[in-house]
Length: 275
Image 1: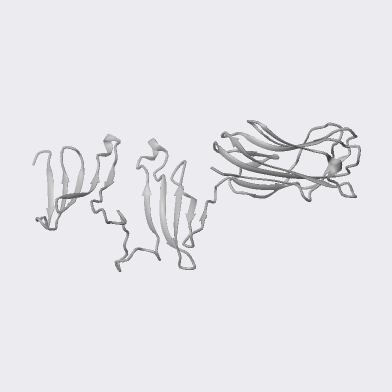
Image 2: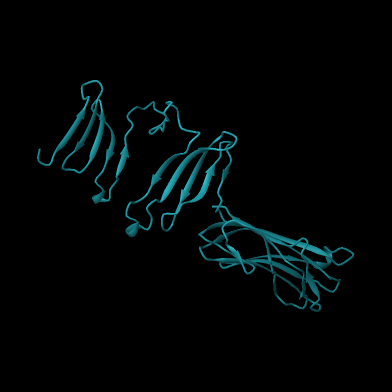
């Protein structure tokens, strides 16, 4: 047959399946003369698999059915996207989409990806309840491990020390600073509570400091202190951050001596990637 190979199974004018390999290097599956699926030539680095749906009223292009003829829910149904040459492209499986049922018999859709090797990690889950979770979406919350005594008061700019992580979903927080893993817009919020403040202090400044710019909240310490000389000050920003940029918190008070303490209670630093 030369360069053309044709295999016809039950092929007639009304209902048939035709598998063809010709000089174009494609395998085509047709139904009643209409192409439904094309497997391209992988050597050309073009589309390797194309599904064509010609019924304008169809709601889905691909349906996975179990032996009972219904969409698989109780057992996992997986769709893998990737490259078979891991040496060339770094991963044998780039993404996996898994439909599975949880303990409440609600169908979850799970997205898994990898950036090296063939190990897959869950990156997003659409729960059967409608909730969407992203286990590795950058988000953190940190507090001090202990009071930071005599931190400022005489114009010393004090970096707030956060020694305890409440959570750090993508392991981006360390050494009192958050490091952006990707370029994006980040919601950042900081609150610092100080004590041993007296009427001599006239100016205070709380800053969220990022690699691109610093966001400052200026306050009069004497206007927001309790009888014990305790006051809390907060700042919230939507910051533009590039990949590998950092963000940390500082506080400074002027006009007296180095006696102002940063206390654990009421002090925190939080943030997450907005998009």
